[in-house]
Image: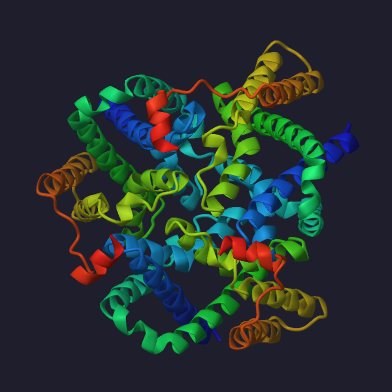
Length: 210
Length: 210
Length: 210
């Protein structure tokens, strides 16, 4: 399984890095700024998770594969940035696979150090979502995930499925596949059918703000 | 004393979480965003303190009471958000008790690992104030505490009183009560009499910016 | 060498703190806010580095010299803030010496714990640059270093020189001096000749955004 996971891992990193490139170029950042935003989007969630659970040094300091993947992705992404919308669907796929993978890794790490199931799901969600949150903060935006993206819900659901199946005695391999598929399915359905969390605001409130 | 401290702790968590709900709903965040902002406001200061002193995993990962308190508070807060101003005074009281408690906890932790008194006071202030700072950053605002809230000063004063009394040989229990009362008194007087730190800006400078 | 390094260290801290004071007063922060921004600008980069590599407690908690230096600098800086532009050139010099020093310290720490050379350079750059990044985020600005400042490139180059010379067998002392001089030279030339990273944007794109 190892090489397969690695390829998925790299595809996820590429997708996250490109989402960083897209956000950073919109803000007219220079090459250094774009590289930092791409890096933070890719490794930010895992870094925050590692800090919270006290894993040190944090993972990406020990694995240059990710650093080089991000570097190459950023350069290629900047050169072809006008063509990025042609591969939008592939990017969405990679990105979704990436958050599924990150959700599972984060949840597993919580289980490994015997944290409460709810906390494990939180760690999985943080791993998958907070790279994008830090990206948006560095770009001086309210994190998009707090306003309309549904993918946090997909991560919470996927993490819960993972915890549930492990408690029911399923093997980690099967559990990871089912939980990952849950994240991918929920997010894809949400995007295809334009689902959002039910709004808590009245029509008047929403108009006042838009 | 344990149960009393726990109730105070929970009241503080509730007050902080509600201040998060209020800020997040003003920004028209969705349910997930509101939950994250409520969580960050409640546990952010303690998390930063734990990271700085190297306590791992950080406290809230090990205590689901806070997580559930925040979850329930967020849901209730969102449902009754139009009624929140009726309980404004109770919220102010809880919030003030919360920062008093967080100031003392943070200062104590610094003493426990033998840090310099000035650093202990800084840790207490960080514990009490940085949840709100992270909340404001995630909501894309300059932290309110940097511009007009006086409560950082109340924390610094309370932490200093704590350190001073301990050095004079007072028991931790008595010291905590006096230091906590100092924070509560200073903050309440500041709000009642609308005290602010003396402005360093000339009238012309202030007008230019408002 | 120890006292010389300490004086340089303090001059760097002073320069960083003053850059914090300047940014914070522009945002009309109160005294507490200015102090926090000055502190974060000075110790933020080193704190992030310590967190990433798992050094705890983080350095500034153990060394009150920096805390007092920042406190005094902030007070003096606020009092004489209208006169700060008269010492602009000295500040630039101190600041440049500061980033050279921080780059070297950060790179050395990475080497000490056997990280990959590219990661060591990244740690040096983070130490030198992320104080300013956190300052800008707290002030609700897109970090200036992501848009036009060239000094990240100076740090990356200086860190690489350090790693290269150490691998070639140079002594740490000589290496530090040459690498530090590289940072100072590159940054000074960049400012004098108004060099920037080559823009990746077309003229139309830039105008659209300005």
